[in-house]
Length: 78
Image 1 (cartoon, helix red, strand yellow):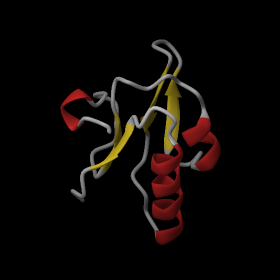
Image 2 (cartoon, one colour):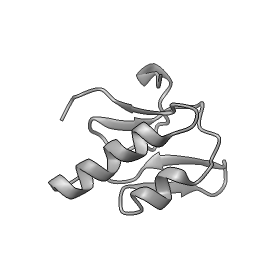
Image 3 (cartoon, one colour):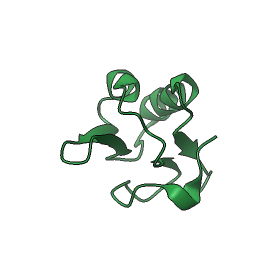
C-alpha cells in the first residue's frame, strides 16, 4: 500500500500520488498517460496532473489497482 508520507515531491497536489516504492515499470503511464509522467533524471513516475474529469479519474484508479508494487495512492483529498 502506498504511503503518503513517502510520496514524491513532484506529484501534483491532490488525492492521487506515487510514493518512493515506484519501480518505474511504466504501467501507470500506459494506462493514464495524461496523468502520470516519468522523472527522467531519477527514474520514477509521479502524478503530473490530477484527474480533471470522470474518465481521467477512472484511469487513475485503474492505474492504482494495476500497480505491481502498490506505489500509487489515493488519499481522498481533493
